Image (cartoon, rainbow, N blue to C red; front, side, top):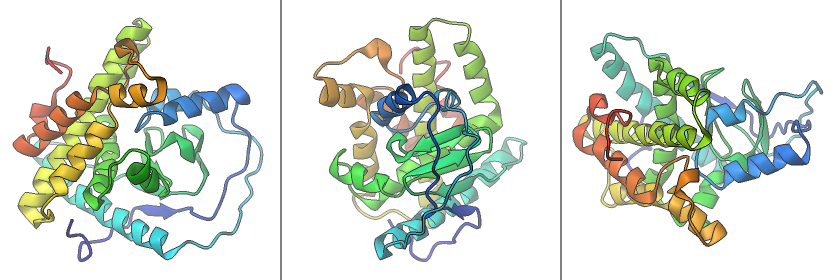
Length: 282
């Protein structure tokens, strides 16, 4: 991905080196919940909201960031800026106003408006403060544990979480959470899958616009992103961790579904083609 000469976003909040201390509510139960979420890429904000902030005063631990971490921080700032340049005009075309999210870099654990979260949760978006959160060590897991290397795979991670921000601005996330509160667990999971697949499609929209406007892609980049989407499918992750697959428990979609909807965004460049809630075939 050609990113080094890209614009840097001013909406990055760097909390690396400031480790937040404080118990996760629920003790062992809270840790188990977060560990389960860590088995999947991304996170359902409704789940995170179950983890309430502690009243304890956080303490900071001084830590020097490595050159690799600083380069990744520079990289995600460029990707975030690129998503801003993509979604601002798209929202104008739809008659709306794009409110830029903030991206928070953290180490180990972080306090958000949705509660405390550990790095094991992976990257997530908190609708309550309109911020994206990522511990950059996740990229090492993406490459080594999930076998999804490459800078465009890393960019896809940011674009997917920005996709959740777009859903929040459009009012889609609120509608889904309202519906989830009135249906069975299996039906709530199915709604979550549709929400996640739409965020994948929105990530593809960014890839389409970024290439058409700024020619950021290099040979192999699309394959990197598609591999990342496939690597984090619920079926693949469950098979790796459990040895079997339980489709009723899917919350993010299968590998094939995630690849399909990311492709849908790349190929069309049209947010209207990302309506995963009105299609019978995911």
